[in-house]
Image 1 (cartoon, rainbow over the protein chains, first blue to last red):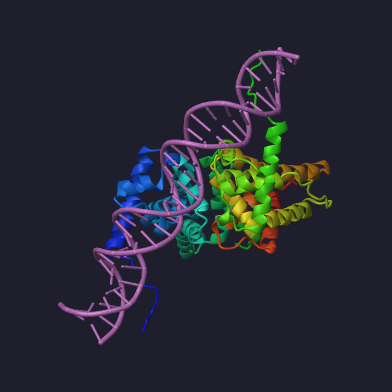
Image 2: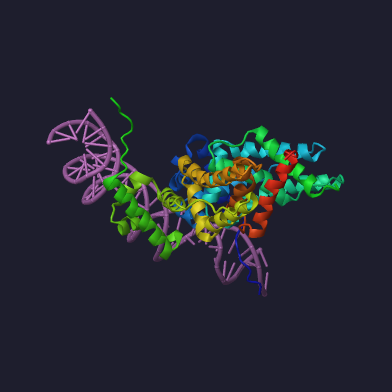
Length: 192
Length: 192
DNA sequence: CGCTTAACGCAAATTATTTGTGTTAAGGTC
DNA sequence: GACCTTAACACAAATAATTTGCGTTAAGCG
């Protein structure tokens, strides 16, 4: 007898998730983040508040979940043929997604949700895309920094500035970060 | 006629702030973060809930404010006589403060507060201490990275891992980050 | 000393959240 | 494909948090 978990993913549950997520995005495009409430989202999605509370726990968790759901299905980063330009292209795209006022509130909610699964899911998105770029470069026989080093050198400073500083980094500053990641490697592995 | 702001800092207001901050820390040492509520803090501090709401807005903002208040008055980072060791000592101390479970919830609340003043105040704490270390080294005639570069290279990766990753960095990883900041400079300024 | 008003206390009104109970249907079994 | 088991939901009642109106206190200032 296989007990397993028994978490339900299809049918009604899927329908509820879709309706709620859509309601969040619709409300977020017309209202201020501060103005959103769980009962409001419940009404717009045709779902009972208690259902939302039981499933997502609280507002930040729901908003984070809805935001990450949108962030995910983007296709692979563009292949420019060189590691440096691949990274710069991706960094710029990622800044577009997270550096705006909406992106900032999204990152905020991800952190505020307090759920490790959600924060790690967010980190995984960037990590996966970086992994694609790295693997590509390695297939070309090119030396690359590790994904961890790229996260530390690009994603982390960008995110830190968005969340803690007055302004997100400029594209120029972003490119400097990328170049540093690559210069750095030439030092640590001078034999190339 | 000088209108100014007229914000009151002394007397009763100061007394209320002190009482509330103390109540937060006391409750935080005996209860789970999740269990804390504004009415609870209000009762323990002998203050009306509405006062807290009017002054701090919400729970995360209050907790962030109370936490940063504790974080600040620490004295200057120790002077070991060398930039590298000064930075490592500070990085380790900062990890102690923010890497624990309590430190993590503190960073969470700072971000979740959604108040730019609070997040920047948090960033300033690290930035000020780094500035002291940098200035010290420069007085010794030593070449140093800029404070911004140190934030990007040490504080940002540390904070990102604490907030988004499963584990905070180890001391060893932290030292590698510090070394990278210094190695990097030798490349960019090879004339030393 | 006296004035102005920011900051507070209190209580009522509003709104959000939790909880108890019955119903629906997803996922599995035979 | 009919038949369980129970996760996920709707609804409503109970509880708790938050906002708001208004009177009072005292901080900052001339």
